[in-house]
Length: 290
Image 1: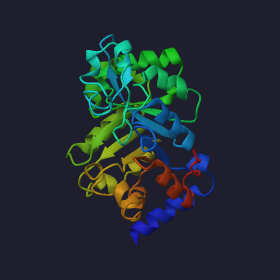
Image 2: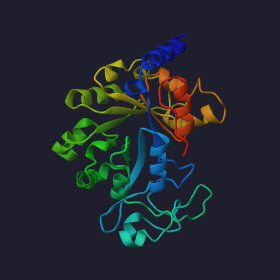
Image 3: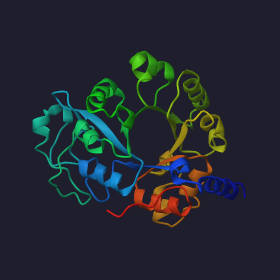
């Protein structure tokens, strides 16, 4: 009964207008079901679909250019071998990204600058994963392209560690701490951030869904910060994941469960299906047909 009441309250509060009250949808590595993962086409496609945020992963070439690559090597996603840092930008651009069938395409590894210019001015934010080592380089690109406010920096570190490494830089960026709710100091980490800065959101991961923070996270949302939960795979959400919703048709124990436990941002590998579901709940605009 509590679950149904929580979800009903969320839906009723959001009927007035999508623009003010919708749950935000993040496309993990772009629209990778229809394009190579972490490709420029995939990010543009996700934006055209209507997602609010695209997530990408940063890496660095031998000549110091930020490129988009999740893995430590390019082996899995391209027809090349080795680390991005083994190649100059000119060299790494010679490799093709693979599609979901493992076939090499004409898509090349995009630079961070290329992605930001392609999405500049569009109603979509860019979530910078695997970026903690490259904040200064990323900041420089964002300033150069005029897209600083479109980017969301993130890291799973405490506030003192973040402050010690990046100093006043953190005052100029949109920032989201990543918090493991399975750790006993999770609430302390959150409160320390709330005391010292204004995070855009808190990304919260959990293998067990027993955290008191999941039961009541109003102490976060009352500050204006959002609650970011991941529906990607079971180890991030105690099994309340995308596959349960899409492959088994059980949205009650997946997406709806996450909504009922405070999610105002959902990161997904099924952006189109999730947006359609949220549309039916009056929580998001209808996805566009690409």
